[in-house]
Image (tube, rainbow, N blue to C red):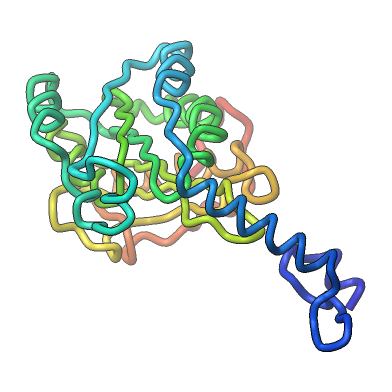
Length: 248
């Protein structure tokens, strides 16, 4: 049991005190639960994310869903899947022509994960997509976002593929986990079966480089084959290649 505890952050072999948990285990559980709740209710740091992306030479746009506040967002998931009117107009007026991929950074259920990881993931991702000649649209920062919000954003910007980087539902061992959802031919009404997901991007999970390698491979293959989701399996091999090589 001791060996198992070293191999997983899951709560195993906690021991007991009478019929209850030991005080230390109970306090650790309470602390992790509080961290998970804080992650859900954290505020997306849009200025810092925008500044980080612009330092990479990337154009950014800021949009919002129809969820007017965090309470609406949590109680009405449907509101997080649709852009508000001002955002629809902004993207319609910004569209300059078709692009291969639009990257969307959405707060999701863990804005703190996005604050911590999104810029660094993009920093690793952009160079890995360059060898394939992939044309990127502006990076869109979306507040009050659910995964499906990327479908509308991608459609309005004329993107062949939408790549949504979003905060995942916090767990007791991973409150700051980022996920990436890739959808070919994004449009309103896409289902989860039409997406590929690269998840568990955080300090104790998938590294930025490993995640960027997988995402870039799926993007290239998805654009080449014209599919994502159940029709596109990750056959990347799982080992990041050196930058400058074309991983196929």
